[in-house]
Image: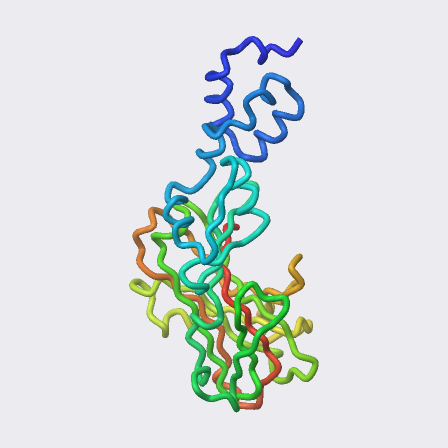
Length: 266
């Protein structure tokens, strides 16, 4: 006997609202008592961010959703552009935590403005943004992305990734340094001293006995390399900066296509 069928609907809603989106889906599949209320807006609005209405108001292309459940899963499966296309927003399907990607245009890229012989701005059929940055050739590679902790999910550990592709003629991208820092608490120099070593081309390399992070392919066809991570506690730590750089070995570098920098719950 399904004893949950004997409970008042409001009681079942309260029970489910204290679980996770994944638990709601599983519970509704195994119990008719849960299934009867699993579509309720009362439940699904609790899994949406507290500021979801403000976020929706900043969409580039406003949308209408029949229910909060449909809104939730749409944000999990289909990232949306906001703030004039500067940011991409989505939700982690298991937890409902917020994910953001900063577009390449909003990154601080050395030699990336008004120097088309170093970096060019092009459209890309696989990008969620209108433009991506294509590295034609530099010796000084330095890319920074900054986001405010107040817009991220609280009490959440975030991992930061550079999202990119490689052109067929890429060169000089075997080794770089990467770090993530709280701008108001950690200086550039301090962060550089503990920077991790990454390879954008995925070769198995070692440097000074330190393991080198390698990229991995995403489900959307792009590549990503971890730049670092941080804990967003109460959201009042100011800005967080992620940086990829190779400014010590001044050989030629080219063939990097940058879509953006993504801040994603671990």
